[in-house]
Image (cartoon, rainbow, N blue to C red):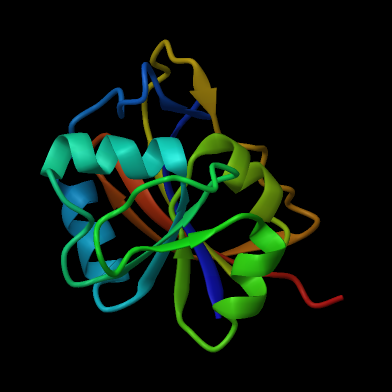
Length: 159
């Protein structure tokens, strides 16, 4: 199954200078709890921001990176794919979370089964934005409200 997980501000901002423009420890805990033991699929810039922050790939998860750079060097165990089609075909039997960035989200939002969105109650300046969630495709199935943010789960509407 393919899911997408993202923290998104009210203005759809998800990043500024390849960093998250807020610090919400509960969101990091939610991300970790939700993706633990799963495969995290991401673009090269997102992968590099995780490496610069943690010094290694996300622990206790499998990492898959989309890049057109055929000589891209990654730590042992990280899988590289040259296209989303290749990744979706190869990872079809796994429990996969699309983890960014903006281009990957835009290309996969209508290909995944579930959206896990942390809606941040702010409108920061940024340079990276999440695509609009089409309410004709996605239906909110769960919401957990917190001060300053909400965890929301969307499922695809049956066609």
